[in-house]
Length: 197
Image 1 (cartoon, rainbow, N blue to C red):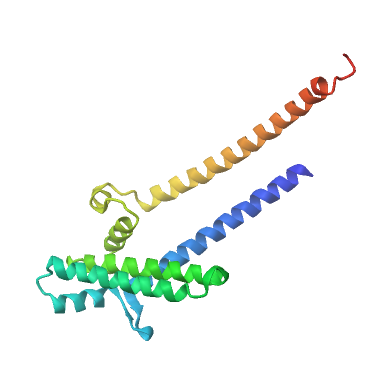
Image 2: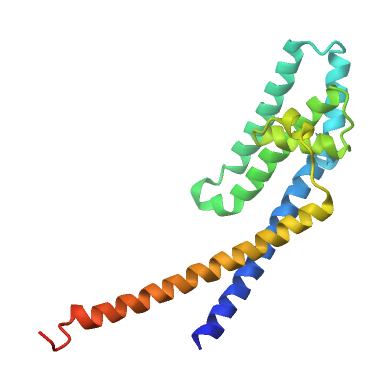
């Protein structure tokens, strides 16, 4: 019975892990899409349009105007967060996820717009990678200069990681049960007197 339930727990855990990864990938994809394309129906322009508007205001891309671009995006982010936070703690379970998605979308759009101002095509995967790297605090120049694995190498690494995680989980589970059995045996013999004393 216990072995069957452990297999079920592992299967449920793997299913939950897969579902969580799918949700995270879908969410990140939607945030990136929102940053690139914007949401024109609500007046939220994409990164290319934001960069074009900025370039029309300041063709020389002076530091003062770049600071103004960053500041104005911060105001948009703050305003959106404030509006979504009006429900207070009671509404937080409903408003926190959209508030975070809005924040990330605005910030990624700003990073992409700055990349566009630097001459990068917003649809270039390297621009997306560099933007995500900068957003999460990684040195994008070093990351882009580093050799990148092929798709086959990435697949192999993920398979090895899954195998390693499965082994480590089952190995830890075995040690836990072995330790519990030894503890029970020792407690039974020495802890209760065992009738020998």
